[in-house]
Length: 384
Image (cartoon, rainbow, N blue to C red):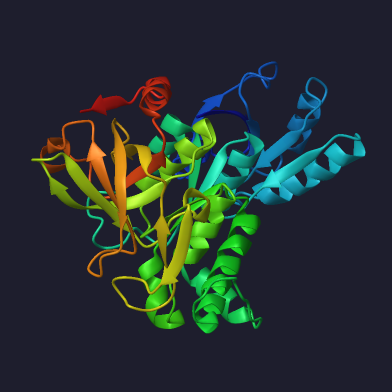
């Protein structure tokens, strides 16, 4: 996304050095910055005033005669730029106008610009799991392509907030309520992070919670999705983006699944995972998380009928969409807890020859045509 920027610096400073510092600072932000003139402040969704040095306060006085705000002052803190910004901000308030200083970590500034531009911010809580070797996403690419701002959040925040919560929680389900309470504490920790960072979605490196908390994030992610906060597991960013597009653009919930078995002869595929939005299910029960045997996993039963399968590549250049019908819900011991057998309408050789990596998103109903139109809007090429 393009962001306008108006530069303020005093002539007494080394302009070559100022330019070098400017370029280095802006390169760490996720946006394409375009310099604007005094009469171009409304050209972009957000225009910032980059206060680069002290001594630039009087230059701002002239600007305030032509533009009436709101004024967003961006400063990196070098060359007395923060000090100048504080003086300018007070002057803005004296004029009866509104303003704000954007200063701090790159993550904070990226997030604040996204909020000002009404861009969805999605959190990456921990890095993608080590086995997701084909799922790295360039953050600037995600912003340019899908208008989403990705920010990194330390997975230890989840652990910290979990440990601060001394409450006991229950859930109306026939399962060990001590385990349910732990799972709901993880949900509350995630919800706190969502509120603190104004997130519209997140992906969680959930296996990092197994040892320190002896519990799993499956239920927490499920409940977030029920509330239309996109939530995926294993730190899978492409899956989060795919699910978020379904949520934001088509108002659809998604089931992040592993393709587990494929039969080319009868065009059937089994898709399974341990977390699913409860609102997608006809009924459900709790079980342990499959791989670890602890915590709360979800065995959900989906309605028999049409489903659509969706996937976006990690470079965001390609997508896959296919469809079929759920034949039955399974409950095998050697698979993740929610399991569906799907009779496919399309050629299943895609999964064996051209797959865009592991996790694929399942939506209930036939939405192939709507997804094709959606991805055409984003200029992403379909893989068949």
